[in-house]
Every structure is written in structure tokens, then in C-alpha cells.
Image (cartoon, rainbow, N blue to C red; front, side):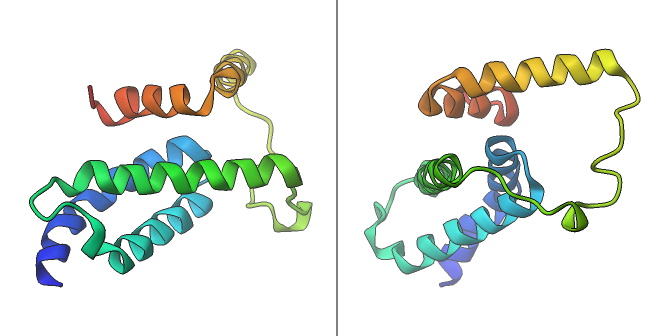
Length: 128
């Protein structure tokens, strides 16, 4: 168990950043990372013993994210107004910035999930 903690714990911040980039929601992203870590703990014996844990954990996280995004697409988004965080419904300070952000998110959404994941890994995490 200590070997697992030594390998996994330093990767948690990067996993959180990647999850936030994929899901665009910090609460859902943190839940996703927790699910990823639970799965990693329960299947630790299935990984390559001398292999790098990083790609294995990213694969678990990515696959869980895709499953969650597919579920969302089937169900559609739902957030009662009274449950929205304060300020989340406020008008953005700059319309131009908001429009650029919206266009960027729309372009990302048009990419196939696999390509979007690769793009986020390269741009957000600096992987190549």
C-alpha cells in the first residue's frame, strides 16, 4: 500500500487538472478523480508491476470521464437555479472574452472525445 501511495499521490494534482479540463466542473472533476483512485486501488494488482502508474491512471480517468460525458449527453444537463453557486449566473465582465471562451468550448465539443482528450493532455498537462 505504501508503494502505491508513493506512486499515486504525486499524480493527484495533475489528474485533477485533467479531469477539470475534461468535465469543466470542479465538483464533478473531483468526484471523477476520486472514482479513478478508487478503481486504481481496487485494481492495483492488474497494472504492470514495473510500469509507470501515470499512463495507467490517466487511462482510467479518461475512460471514466468518457462514460460520464456519454451519460450526460443521454440525460441532458440539469442544475436547479437555487443550487447554482453564487455568481455563476452573473454576466461576464467582458462580452468579447465570454464570446471567445464560448467559441473555444464549442470547438472543443465538436472534436471527437478521443481527440479532445489528447488535445487537453498536451495543452493542459504539457504531455507530448
